[in-house]
Length: 209
Image (cartoon, rainbow, N blue to C red; front, top):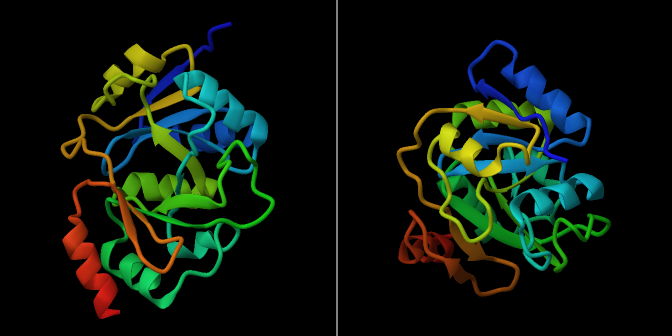
């Protein structure tokens, strides 16, 4: 049965409270980040994660990244980062860099069926405010699998209306490009997806640490 999707401006007086309530009740929300609109749920809730996959028609073998408000929220998700990984975080967070790290035991398999997890701190003040209130969120692009990620709240509603509980409209996103993904789960970093931050720049920072 389709959901009754609530649609609010992200700066509406009740937007943050509604988003926190939705996450706490196991629901799915959409909000803008510095790269794309993201569809999100509680990363520790297997039922909510399963619902997120269904909402996107997302293949089950794809892990879901986690967004954070700040690095202090990493502790329950991944093992302690190395000195070089911390250097990358200091240089590029908040920003459009997703780091793949070794995940903690006990996380739902629906979050990641692999021994690793992608994490990022977005450079979007309202997104970080939301993540401060909710805690870390499992977030992936707010589009149906195989379709272009929307850059406006209205375009999100056209794809995911009736599939999610809440859409927070943050207007048109100027960057509209997915983050760079760097796998740091082994001793040598690997570029998994090119994004706004060039691999050569990341490697220079890595080697200088």
